[in-house]
Image 1 (cartoon, rainbow, N blue to C red):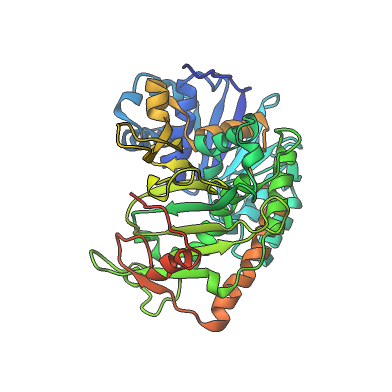
Image 2 (image 1 turned 60 degrees about the vertical axis):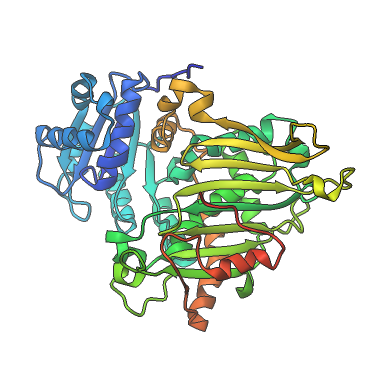
Length: 481
């Protein structure tokens, strides 16, 4: 199986924060891979912009060093030099006037124009204003903004309003790299491209859905930042919310940006308020390394590094079917997956000791991207009718062979979508605000009650209270290994 590479039009891409970690680790390696695969035209140009006093040659040397660190050895071939020739650099003061006239002179007519805000949200407004007042951004320019999109509903509205003063909503690309993962998009293909699943994708046939994003690492050097956000703001409000929407949304009439995002918005607005008893918060202990409070350097921190919750969606498709979400740091393993557990057959013709179980569809996002569906068959042998579950497995690495290594990562796909002008996999402003409108009352409740997170051992599956959240419903979390 060979993927088809469709080149994009020539473009000028300006990366504000071009010397930062995200640019060096993700954005520029992604662009290089697209160049290496022939998707980026020779006329394309990338301009790094930051406060560092570098010239173009100095910037290229920095990025060459970053490639040696973040690319596979076999990728660092003779095409690196050709790619680096497409890089330029300008020192720019985001809060002042320095560098803006020079940037204007570098922008070309007749090519796609995009600006990547790889900086903190506090600079989004200043960058948008200066691009506008200096006459740099055209009316068809695109801007890419990274999360966090605010820290509550008020700040999200203010941020959206600031960007809207200078750019139309059709020009704003709010990037969530989870939506660029191959398996996340395959979720839509499975649901809407196969008559086998869509008739069963509802409360009549689905017992429950689990969405897990578990990380093996702690907050580490991000402790000071993370302690001001926590798992709810850092993961649930954006990443897990988007996975939930794609799993639960109605079929859009077309696979196009606003049609898809309209349906996602309906899911968020249909979410029921969550009772305190349906949420578990946790902090990892320091049984085999620093504890959360040591990493955060806040001995009395009440910020959660783990969260599990039971959600209900108040609509015809999902009424009565619970969705269980969990995410955490320093977990047993690194694992992200969406698991749809179907109901038992209405009537079993087999004896109780035959061992029939429910069908389970597992969509693995990381690691080992793939999809498997467990089905019940007879166990081979002459010993009567004994039933076992076996997976119909599509692990990308096995199904696609060598091509699996060349599947574009999330940033590769999403940046090319920006250049193409395709907003399907990017969040719209009203989506962001609706997510915060649902999230804020939960966080406010914790603050008012002064809830303290439960402790859990690093390297475990989370607090015992999270296990009980499922156990009281007669269900179990999927094992993380």
